[in-house]
Length: 335
Image (cartoon, rainbow, N blue to C red):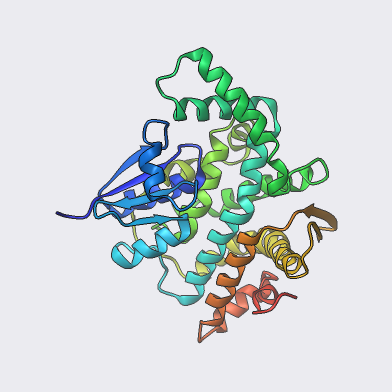
């Protein structure tokens, strides 16, 4: 029997649609299974954690966590590759994907559960996805329960009244910078999607489906919206570009969002965990950003640092990272 896979996921999960888009791009045979009450027993049979996405093979093998899933399947299905040939650009792609998973998720989650219209929209869609055959009155009750639960989780991504402006400014700046970068190319690194595209487009696509950020897309970033939609079922249109052609519009994004926000925050998070703190504060763009430290983020930063250390010729990469104010944060030990 040839290999076939099931992806247990959710339409409102950026990490689920990220994996689904990757499987579509690779042409990997699969079925998309929304995690509903009806298939919960099958999901729990294979899931080590109560999280989507979960990928299960017809041989009973199972994988969770979107980035390790993609890394594993890239070894099994290497063509068309999502890794630029240039090691420097391959690392930059991985760095942007890490930013997407750990920082862009902040503004995705913030917009979804901060404003009333977005709360109502997301809660109803989540309820309907979980109980597709339920009566409308039951959906409303489930939606209200979900809404209350998720709003209480805003603090987990660092979203509160003191950080609201910082998070929303990051989102708006990302739209503006990517809008310019994507004006003359279909994907972040040229004419085919890289790992970075799958990670960042998944977060921004979720924003695009919510009422408040959708208006910002319409006003500021039609190219970004088209890219995020295209990344739901992408196809290669050509080759990756080199840094000389990417630099003018990609470097400002690296400087502002990754060197200016994400890596300082991620480094501070790792330090707080080492010191056993229950809360940490880091100055981002001259303002304090406070939240509780998160273990997963520290682990993923450590993996990123290991990847950086393993690159033998860092000439071009260090030039990029130093200019973007990123290099100092990628040392093996926190600053």
